[in-house]
Image (cartoon, rainbow, N blue to C red; front, top):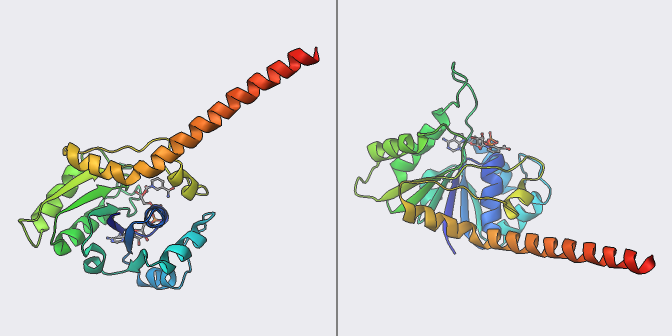
Length: 221
Ligand SMILES: NC(=O)c1ccc[n+]([C@@H]2O[C@H](COP(=O)([O-])OP(=O)(O)OC[C@H]3O[C@@H](n4cnc5c(N)ncnc54)[C@H](O)[C@@H]3O)[C@@H](O)[C@H]2O)c1
């Protein structure tokens, strides 16, 4: 099992962090809004998603899910760092506002003191992986620390976010470091395989029941 830090505790970050902790990983979710973190620590969620509140409570109780405003606490010993901050369409060209992603990258760089994989889940334009890499490289407090940046765009839908995480029909990963992307894939693999297995059983059941209906119709005639 892995140690994961999720930066940004909104829709994507809270669901991602909680679902990864439910798979047995140690997860710390970081946000810059102290009131949000305080409320999360009391079990009060900023969003409603079916099943999420129970899942948060279960994993907090099991000691696998933590909330903090401190990057240093969140990054402590973690293998994977997910960036899941907001990217509003705010620029004059109508593109994504990268300010929060850039600020998260600087926050990571200032506290990272060990090797880690940094995965961007925020919706960003092509080439943002290089931007994040450059910001981290430039601001690393320990320049010798090795890191890789992986892009992992999110497809969850509000209202079925937990269900979408647990039954992904695709997980998209991109990086110039293939080995790093492969390591991130292993995080998702248990869910992805289960989802494929369930889908195959559902398809097999569908085929069998269609055949049975056809045969029954033939017999009835
Ligand atoms: N919500 C969706 O359905 C959805 C689906 C697919 C992709 N996305 C993308 O995922 C990203 C996150 O979306 P969301 O809906 O979860 O956003 P959100 O606004 O619900 O949450 C973002 C969180 O990030 C926090 N934050 C901002 N800057 C921070 C920083 N520097 N350090 C720590 N925390 C910081 C904010 O306080 C907020 O709690 C966006 O790029 C969005 O486009 C969202």
